[in-house]
Image (cartoon, rainbow, N blue to C red; front, side):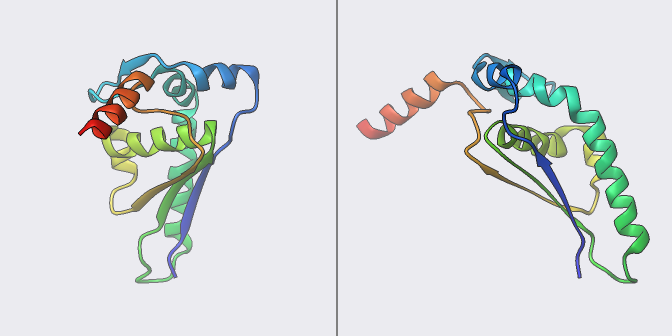
Length: 135
């Protein structure tokens, strides 16, 4: 059997979370990918502690896994504000050296529900939809 490390990012909890949900200001991450500043800032506050907990969970999986067991799977998930956080954590797992090192050989996925816009900005999305409809 394969172990599963489920990282659940909580949804909107406070007025501060709501402000971050609505902050559609594009910013580039060090890797060059543009994301919305609000959710990105919120994730940056907790990212190091989440990585530490994931590393510990993976260590426990390895310690208690039967011989020959498949590598664990890490799934980032969340609803609303938490979905945005889960998407950004998944992105970090792809581009951040610390995350990449911690997750070598591990299957990784993200499943979100009702997440706010994280990548791009609303105007780009509307223009793209309109351009696609025209043709």
